Length: 561
RNA sequence: UGAGCCAUGGUGUAAUGGUAACACUGCAGAUUUUGGUUCUGUCAUUCUAGGUUCGAGUCCUAGUGGCUCAACCA
Image 1 (cartoon, rainbow, N blue to C red):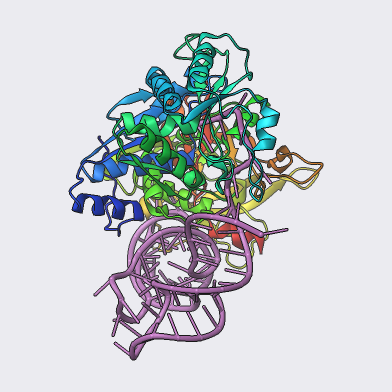
Image 2 (tube, rainbow, N blue to C red):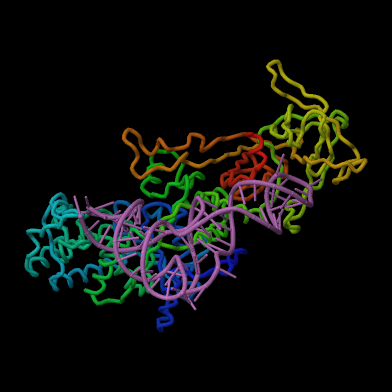
């Protein structure tokens, strides 16, 4: 397992409750630690999975154990190799290497053999009830279920029927194999759970070899056991499955894997249901699973989030059993923290207004040396051209500035970053009163932070040369949802109604020329605007940047007052 | 009229039965050629009621509140 060290993540933290379990096991002499990350390949991994990945791989790492990647591919109708591939890519990108790559489908034959064993022990039977009958006879949480009329079939008959199920003699849904436990059990999962269903479906790995497929409950614990998983860590909603998990393992007398549950990750403004995310993709609400507005790992990668930031986030969020809703801002904090150290700084104007330096020679070009990253000298410097006509951010000028505004305004002087001090002398407007141009004068002695008489200015703004600026498409992303989408949306609306109509806006920005080569995920901080990632599709001819996170901006609050 | 899980600042997560802490957020200030970063300071927490104890966030009892479970999904 290889993870580059991330600063800040090595702080001493107390043990989470799963680590306590492991340390207790080690104290008892059970020193081997084997975990697994078991996604179903029916969608892309999201930030919630990232927490699970960091936990499972982190546990193995911490205790000198191993972590497997196992695909829980027992439902062929929902699964696809595209998802298998994306999951592997995302786990690797997060910085983890799995000890073994397994598939529940690798175990289909063994699982089948064990099922016959269960039948022979009288612990399983073939049920001919319809789906509807099964549902009705299961009872409710308050009312006990009733036994299936087929529950007392002989071992021979069960065996024969089960073999014929496998042989493909029956249509989908005609029969199931059920565990014989207790139809009055207070835990619904223990009321003769279905072990196998008939599904004449093509499986992405086993092809058409099988027409019966094991259910999660029958496959998961056994798969863990086959892999000698010591600590099977899953989310809280599986806690009610634990008695069943243990029941199968005990009845089969196989390696005693044990299950532990932790609370899944929830985040503000974020939808974590794979089913819902799939709907967004299928309905083309987003461009795909890696649309930067999605909460998927692939989307975050494209947005410019770093693996280290996500790992640090997962570490901070912790592991407990309490329901939680993490503020999206916490994730962004870790992204900012990481990017602050590594992202190169560039100047870019998203909403331009022209500035003419009236006392600067026409046709002259001057190169200014700009620091790429004030936090990292090794990032070097670059030359940026300066001319008589520039563009600055429209927000960086106010004709009637409020009291604490210290950027450009009539008669006020500001520093053009890394170049001259300029003073606004005149405001040019069109017939409708819109500002079209600002006329400024510059102080020729104010290079390199100096000024002719030692005066200082508070405002420092970014700029680009009108002649040299490159155009680029910038995608500004906001949260996909304007508010929390409930699991059950109110009558008359769908969860699509909760989508933020301004989740994606595109602007044409003007960039300093050094950005022309940027492509393929390079990250930049556009000064006082935010962090941007050069889109993978970006070319020097068509520059496209995705916004990652916004800088902390107390000045915008001031503007709102 | 079920079973299981959970309850600590605004948000998360800690605390051998012994001074409730850490991070994020908020607020205030300092530094700063990014209103960023960095630094300093600061506000704010044990669901309720009993009980055990010299001492309870922690143990016990009862209550309250929240979550999960009735797919041939995982």
